[in-house]
Length: 328
Ligand code: UD1
Image (cartoon, rainbow, N blue to C red; front, side, top):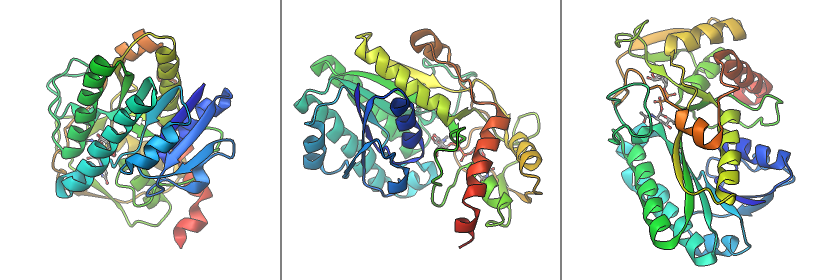
């Protein structure tokens, strides 16, 4: 199978590429390296430098003939999207339309989207299944919903078959230590906890300890990036077998609080990890946990690597390997 990954040099894309390369598929990586790293591109993958806002370049690469396109090229900071919506419109919406229309124009028939639990907004019931109302509470979440809606239209009008994978909280690193690049300036909980453990941040700011949860801190569904990556392989096989379009959640179905993440991180890193309790962060729901029954039923997908210990252990290993570089 020939697979082209837009945004394939980033954190999730690198892990997705590894899964396809492991079974000897041909992998192309298209990335503008704005947050992805050239060193993350596997030597067996083909690399195309380019930006999804540049339609001409997108079409030039699509023309090389691909069985499936996977779209992971997006800005993803929910807070930033509320302050800089134009950045998100231009990249996440216009850029995605370039990919979708580019696929139609060049005859690519299968499309996989990195979507997000952010399409749901504040949950009205738990666990959140795919039928849950879609009311994003930030512009980032809206951009994902907008791409999903366009995929639906283009599948009806032009026969593009697609799978939209709504990730919950992606976390962890490759268990064999094959991925060593770190994200710059992380804002997500686990990378921040790791930076405190490494001594490059003084403390973790815990955003709220008065939520209606068992220990008062926010609860999320953390899913290991290798599980997410396997979901893409199953989605590609599903599309190539002609089984049609799908929208599915990918989550571990288990809720973990900030405090539980901290406790495990302290245990595994053997570092104190100082914390400071501050106000809630705007737009943060108390609890967000997935139902992944649909992914199991349609793709045979199941989270198998997503224990909290495995998530923290695999992440800590990469932070330790980067310790020298981080100190500078
Ligand atoms: C957010 C987005 C999600 C997006 C993901 C990737 C929403 C509702 N969620 O997830 O769609 O895909 O980012 O970037 O838009 N926390 C702290 N201190 C910190 C950082 C986080 O206490 O320094 C807490 C948060 O309040 C939350 C939990 O940790 O309870 C997880 O936060 P985070 O890792 O930022 O992910 P989400 O906000 O859940």
